Image (cartoon, rainbow, N blue to C red; front, side):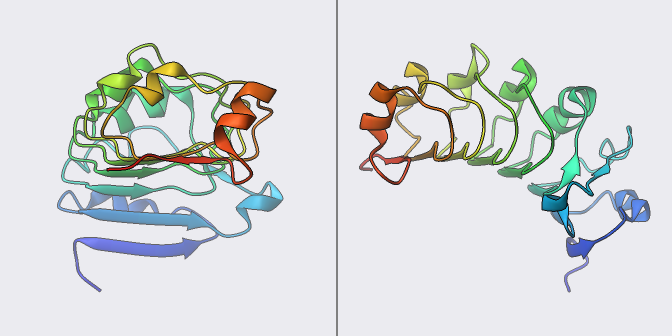
Length: 174
């Protein structure tokens, strides 16, 4: 395994990994996250990972403070996955992730996007499956670079359901 890439399925978060400041990819999937056994990420462990380009914390519960004060400061991120992280909001500071191309927030409790979300100029893929959206935010449809949007499993209104079709996604031509 490349010293700059760490990919693990774990039961407990191995906090010593967060000391590797040259890490490019970190994938920590908490085993059995879907059973409600998620671990909560302790504060101040992501701060040192300034070189990170890909972060996957599937099944790790993230506090709003950690999302705002740590994850949103990792400006080299191109791919961010926070599935089943117990999130109810996306902080406005997400626009600091100027290199973000893929964002997966599947299985959370999010019902809205921050006002300035469309400033994520490099975002191409957005997965919001299984959240609390009732309609599709207009700002998403105006983001030209965003070609793959998935809203399946949200309590969408009938107009939004028609727009999405049976699969719950929008794939715009490039």
